[in-house]
Each structure stands twice: as C-alpha cells, then as structure tokens.
Image (tube, rainbow, N blue to C red; front, side):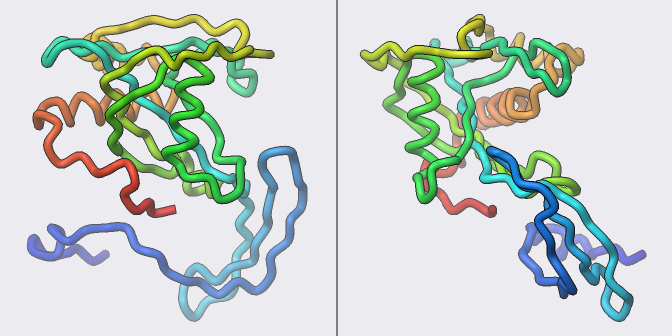
Length: 214
C-alpha cells in the first residue's frame, strides 16, 4: 500500500492509461448498448483477466434552476424506470445517441423536449462515470439558469407521457438526498453539486463547452 504525500495529494486527477488487451469480443448488441468481453492485463507482468462491461454512448442531464439568490428551486420530474421497478424523481436527461452531437446541444434539446423550457445561461456542474466497473457510460450534468418557455410543445410517448413535475427548493432537495428519498444518480449528484456551487456563490463553474473526460 502506497500513500501520496500531502503535496502530491493536491495534484490528484483522473488520467487515461493503457492496458494490454489480448482479445475483445462484442457478445451482444442492443439498441443503445453493447455487451463487451475483454481479456486484459490489469496488472503488469501478470496474465490477462476477463472483464465484461456495457459500451454506452453517454448521456447529459440538466439541473434547471429558477428563483432569487438563496431561494432557488430545482425542477424535478418523475418517471418510471423498469430495470429497478420504481418511479424515480429525476432531472431532465437524455442520451448522446446522435454521433458527433455537441453535449450542450443535446442538453438544450432534452430540456426543451422534457420540460418545454430553454435557458439563457449554461454551465457545467459535474462530470462522472455512472458505473465505471461495469459500463463506459459518461454523464455530464449541466446547470441551466435564466429559464423561459421554449415556445414549442413536444409530444411525449411511452414513460415520458406519464411524467409528473415539481419545482422544489434546492435546500429541500438536498434534504431529500440526505434522507435517502431520491435515488437517480444524475439527480442525486446534480443536487449535491448545485448545493455546493451555490455555497461558493456559483464561482468556479466551468463553461458549458469545457473539456470532458470521457
């Protein structure tokens, strides 16, 4: 076990690195994701091990805020999620399933399609991998402020046709997270990040086109 020095710890950042892959096979392909099996040497000098994971195009999510400073409200929507057999309160989100599409453009589209809103002020709150031990999926959470009607209503189908909406105090949303009442990863992480950013008076937010580790 090796610990970094205090000075080294201040420089912590994730980094790309290569490992030798002896073989790679797509064992199943679906509409959105593929299941991949790699034989990869994860430890130098040792033989390869088998790792299975889903290959995912990635997604974006949006923390949409309204209200005066210190009394901001976040828009939550409730949607049925079949894999977990639950109605989850979430934030607007969608797949990056259009090749080459700019993530901000995707976020603007999802905000409009799911909420009939657009925003005049955008920033990046947080980036993360949803489950890096089992999927390649990266997710970027944007912050959208200065909201206004999109001017267009969108037809919603399937689960989206039954969505419910609520404006919730950001402070109360944080309490919901800490009480274990919310479970969508983008909502939980987005609320935590927005609360932390507000505590810093929104200083240090990255621009909407900031580089993305994905």
